[in-house]
Image 1: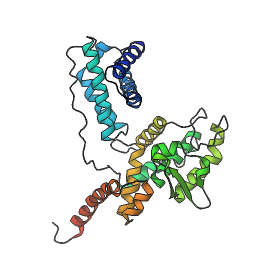
Image 2 (image 1 turned 90 degrees about the vertical axis):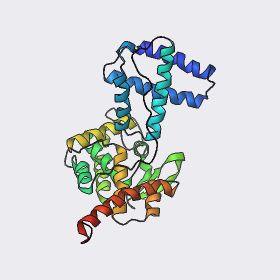
Image 3 (image 1 turned 60 degrees about the horizontal axis):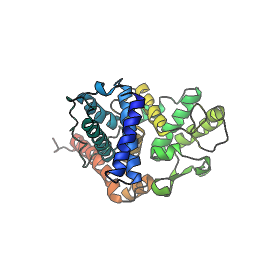
Image 4 (image 1 turned 180 degrees about the vertical axis):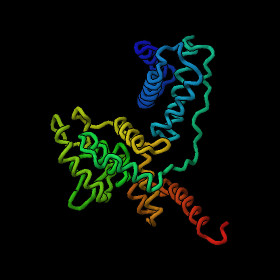
Length: 301
């Protein structure tokens, strides 16, 4: 599907949702974001025409959504949006007849976060620690910051200089609904940030801005760029499996609980409104407990 054709059919489909389905503006905007993401994926695999689309592409798309760090509910919504659009194309006789669009959406339910071990995490975090390259200093500061604070990627890319208190070794994070929380800033992350702010950021900045993390053009670092940075760092450190900014948030929580941190403290640090959301990490730590028990208790084996 060429870019022009995609835009034409998307515009018609969104009008259909508005007029025939009477969906809200907010819902239609969500559909549009999801479908633009789907088209970006098709372009990445060179499926640029409607006739190129195959059933396998839909299965690959579902897997790709997982690798870019989306949660199961977001994946389910993306697939539902895509399936609705493909059904629309099929009704317009624009879709190849052999494409099966009834692919299974992501199954919702309890999903344990996949956290790296402490050694794996340190290896990943430190892979750029000695580089003198401008962008490497930025990327190292970002990775240290994410692991040190457990920040969401949205909180990291929107971080303002005024939110960092170097004297108190703390950072004020603004989470969902702009709810603020104060989080300690570890020694390593503090040093990495200071190094970046003194030696790297001044060479990136083009116009006056107080946002901490900047791209090579001097503008605010985007979420997608942050994901790409983490993917690159994971590749350089030879970390196995899919790694995203959210992986470092998982590591932050899991390693704290493994080290004996109180669940309520971890809840506050993560910015979770409900303790139930944080409790999922206790199940991860339980696996660590079982492993330790099996290795050390004389009657375990």
